[in-house]
Image (tube, rainbow, N blue to C red; front, side, top):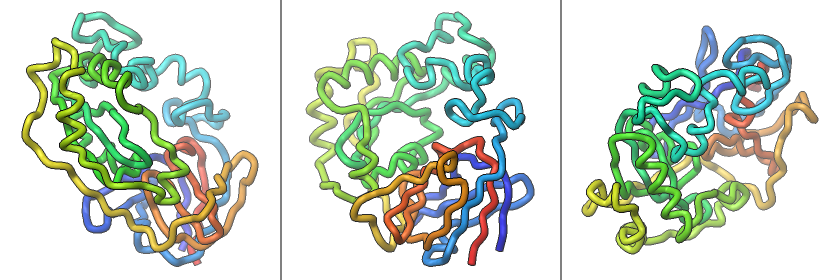
Length: 264
């Protein structure tokens, strides 16, 4: 079997285990079905997710020009506290920003390699947790816009991590934590503007990833340095492929790369 197209973040469906799908222009692949099979990845060209041109990818699947111009890459995406649509102030495209920012957002705790705090649109739960490779997660605040979620995250970052150690996540070097206890412990640090949105009674969500074998020590595949790679696929966690030889490939980190996938 062979598939060809531009890489985008894998789509997921909650399940036991989670189901992963790669969507191409005229086809799709259920990645779970190729576990334990040999997969060859060949890099063909770049294809910016915004302009579609064959230009080197700069960040987030965009060429450098588009990264600094498209509203889909505004600073408020990585730093929600910079959101201004609730003030009717434009960053790059107010209509786009209102649609994205003025909707319910969740501040959550997720345990991928350690407990971290994060922000996502309510509609992206549990997708965001799956993408981060979290084996357990819990919502702690639900607010009406991205700005309130952002300032809550900033306040909590003084007391808990906001980054995932992706190497620990991929080697499954993780411990279970009592996220309800953590949620209650952090409540006092939530900003006054967001206190009324605290979620006082819910339970954590547990997630099971389709992994047959975890790597002992990860080797990251970079298509710019290694444009052709072949290996036996042993698992999918977060947005990563895990191969038998300890190679891992970040699909989301390679968005905008046009590739050929050959399955044997």
